[in-house]
Amino acid sequence: MPELVSEGRRERRKRELRARIWDVAQKLFLAQGFERTTVEQIAQAADIAPATFFNHFQSKSGLLGEMTTQVVSYLQGILEQQFEAAASSRERLTGFAAYAAREIAETRGLARNVLLELVRSESRPGDPAPYLARVHEPFAAMLREGQERGEVRANQDASFLAEMVVGVLNAAVANWLADADYPIEERLCQAAEFAWEAIRADRA
Image (cartoon, rainbow, N blue to C red):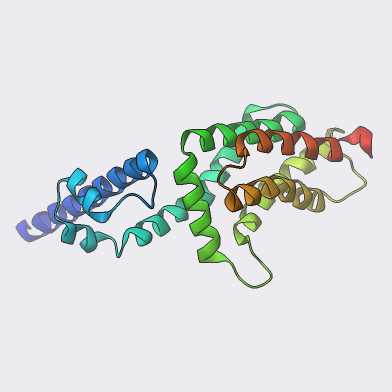
């Protein structure tokens, strides 16, 4: 029994230390950028030796890579939250874009680095943004509801409309990934309004 308790404590300390390194690194990435943050700075801020960092993460890029695994789940959570909070299809679409724009504004440098890493790690020939497939279905489901309520044009399949809407939003994101000075916050909101004009029922 004492061995089990001891092992449990060791695992708990290990998890807590890993979480501390993660939190410290995220704050430094936000404050001064990924490229300008060193492992030594992370270790100093976390009050550990640099070697301890490498016990938990293969490298600084490896840590960033792990952060990307949270991105799609986070996007899906935002979608669900915004789609539940708004009544109309237009409010759902533009509300999601506005929320995403605010999040990007608050974590601009880190968000861009994480998305770039996500694209690099997942890209395959002919499929430069595979993460889009995982946000497509929530949009398709939302647009199907909009069609049933007579808000969204019904002369096209909801799945196709979702592809077009996600594509329009991703065009703004792609431009931002190519140019850090691109006004992504403004363009995301404009892209959502543009997409709505194309899919609203009275445009069918």
